Length: 110
Length: 157
Image (cartoon, rainbow over all chains, first blue to last red; front, side):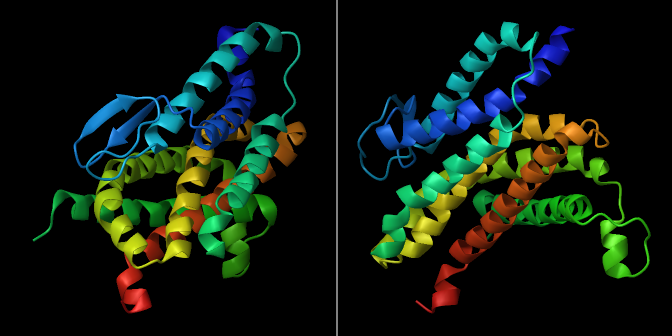
């Protein structure tokens, strides 16, 4: 099996790990970096607001991306023998999106 | 008169409309396939759904990048106004949009994979589920973005 075929086989793992890592990063404050839009400055990790709001979204996505790439790279040799289950690619992201509705409920219950 | 952010916001909205059209067409074709193309509704479903895959991916990525580009402008102006007006559900709608879109973005390679061979019955469930999820994400995000963008007019404040 070619490397390209192996890479496509980990796409489900990539989607699942990104969804989990992104959700954890946001909830547990594991953002790789923060952005201060008013100052136009970046800072490592989760930072408090400084002269205006702070944005963690980009940093959470970066955490999710790094985790998904690492997990996909680790899984690469294993998927050669057996393809991962397809439900990983949609069921795990679906659960994460539903969990977000729970995490964000306070916005709608105030 | 028009700042760069305004131009990008309008472009972002237009691309989102195109994305909604493409992903809706594909989702209807895969969820309710039609063999003939009789009336308008049947013809809408009787298309080769796989042809929309690349267009969906390209439009999703470009729309996402534009949204991410103008997000800081929203964060330092519109969002502060929304919070000052104590419109928490509106702010929450936008929060939900950004989370769903980020997760949807990471699903795009998998979405491409399950559409690579649309006749493969083994991937059918994943194909239907992934396309349906993207459909819901895109429609929800458009509506949420539209409401946030027009919040002052819509809520009369």
